Length: 123
Image (cartoon, rainbow, N blue to C red; front, top):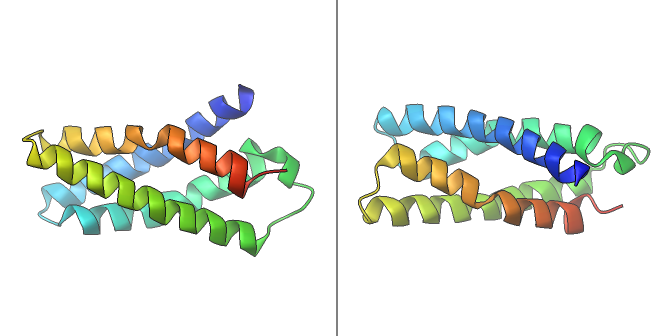
């Protein structure tokens, strides 16, 4: 449970980064695909470092592993596709864009945690 709370806190930070960047770019007229990609490039790096050194501490002794970072980036790509799909689905259903951004971010939390814990940061 403690691990999920830490994971959730890091995810909230990542979501704040994502939401801020996506909201600014979408409001400025950029496509959701571009906005989410830019945001996730920044937030994925920040969140990875938190997970590597705080959330999944058992990996601390093993040190940084490029294979784990590559797996994290692959997962981030899957999460990116999920978020963009949810965003465009909601926008197509006439949900306001900023609400669609928020829902798309929150909807990926549990999927991301399960993949991170069982595949990427497994001890």
